[in-house]
Length: 219
Image 1 (cartoon, rainbow, N blue to C red):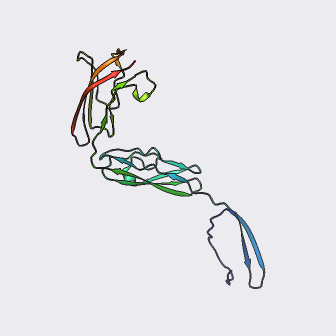
Image 2 (cartoon, rainbow, N blue to C red):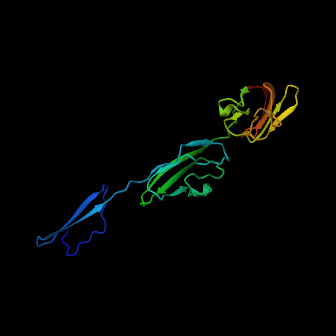
Image 3 (cartoon, one colour):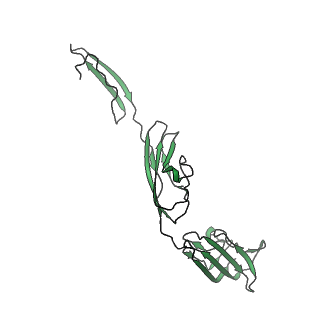
């Protein structure tokens, strides 16, 4: 209701879709109405990813972020200076040396926006805890047990794995903790039996570790 001769209302706020009726009543009692349909679109649903813990200097790809909404959608992460590309849904960070909260803001095809946050916690230097299997089966059922390699909680700074046969001859060597021995020698399957290994690595504190032992190759 307004007593002005030419009242103005430039905007109205609604939170539900539906038909909205405007009624104008003049001072002489005359009325006029107008109806308009308003559609209220949902904001995009955003999950910026699970919080995670890394060691100092690590680079992280936030690969578990998900978004539900109306395409096309645009993405913007902040702080963008710590990311290789802040406009990707799954960006990769630069080397991180302190705990950071990354915020993902998404704008959908309707112009609706939403945001969520993920925390990447940088811990004090962590020891590269290691688990070493005592047997493996290259033709086995489980993929993770088809090659012999140590399993690290945190990646080592430097790494060497050497495999020896029963006479002490080197038959395999790796400088990559992700590449283990597949049970072959020069492309030929090694016989089932016990083999010797030596593992040398530097943890995140640059502390040197050595492990020696035997592993059973199972056919």
